[in-house]
Length: 310
Image (cartoon, rainbow, N blue to C red):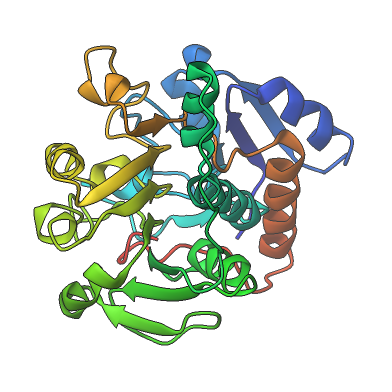
């Protein structure tokens, strides 16, 4: 594949430009923010590097699209994809960042941080014995790179980690991996649920009342995609104490609208899609490595199966 003209569209285009231009590659680059993007840029390009184009641009003729994020639903979900176009994604420290994010909220719960904060405000001295992390049960939806890193972190602390995937294939660090349609009977055993699933036709609103009503006062953390969760079912599960708390980093619509009831729910913690941020250094490094492998006709470890959507 001959890649000569590369278009990089990103809010961090200036930072990416400084890093990539130091490599003195024999390529022609355009670094621009999306608000300056026009169709002529896409017509010029052999490759498009971006993360979240807000409008539906025509880039069907480019040879290669590289996502600056781990997710590619912005390119594939409910869209026709030209199978002649190579699609790759960024692989970097996402797994570690998300694993640490999830673990921090599990420890916060086990250590009664919110309880002690409230007691401090009320000047109450009431002891609660923190719970041990070992022996807790965590169910992770999605057993790919990110799910496996969460399982590695958690299992290393003595947590029993279970997984749910479309295939049910066993993976390292999971005590057991179940298929989507055969895991419901195990839900009431779980202390925490973590969603890392990509957004596809199969995962759209997958986590609904059929899942949440089976829980017994479990914590829920969503670091996958917002559209994989039925928000109404989640709010009802919080009301009915099936879900003890929810930590939500991703939403169907971002930024989350001000009138969304999740903002003011007392047992919901909202973060603005920061559990796995692509830094300019990591984004550039993965892009450059992928470009090198393409130029040298080497195997790509970050190629996307566009039929599966991830």
